Image (tube, rainbow, N blue to C red; front, side, top):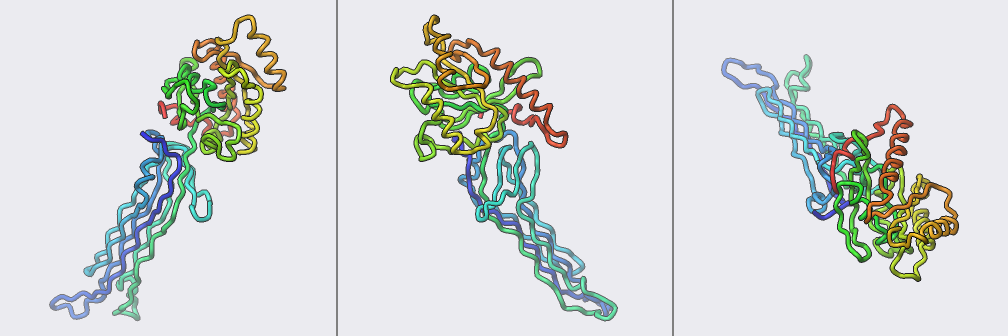
Length: 357
């Protein structure tokens, strides 16, 4: 299934039904009085978070969503029937914005979270509504109120605890495949990953977290190089970033330190808050470095990068060094959860309930 993380749709709630002007006319009842009923309420448009969805592709092709109008009132004291509401199922993590003003109307951060997008119009009043002791034969009625209409922009940001960041072919897909149930495409050419992948990592019994792998970022992405910044939004809800570095590039002229600095620079250009997130350095493909050179190469890299944070040395392909990394990540995520405010759901279970994106 094609991954789509943006869509624009039009929604329209139903109009309320018109009120009715009617009088009771029956044999032997000369003064029947007014009996025109009120109109029914128009249908509203709601959105609900669905943990079984992971893309907005349904809204790429179905862009118009309308609720039905309420029925008009009728004689014999009959009110018009209210129209059914419509519910749009969207992936958890969807941000719903007003396409014209850019205002954020709602964020679906929990499964089965229901939000009102457009309210249906109320029904109009029939003439029985205006009957009083001094106005015994009213002929007034009101039309139904119109339902709300909006143009919405949907933006999906996946919910994950950890995000993988790095150049194309740094080994991000290999790493997420090695530590989780995700099975992304892996090949020996750049930009193998074309859309975000989610994987659930099991660190032990009842110990898990979610990892998000996004397409590789290259220098000049802010100017449109490569896949640009379009997928970096999926890292904005993570608690930790893993900066994956290929310590043994095929091209000897490539400097891993320069590449790492370029990634950090592009990250800062995109979003300062994303740049300020906790970030760990993961040096990958150490199995391709001669054993006698590994320690010196790692020390040289860290020194030239002037890195002060945590450093992990792994080989995702050979599965070396992965267990200490996984356990450290879980401890960091668990500590972050414990510090979360009590009125905020810190561990969104739907993010670990799903499998691959």
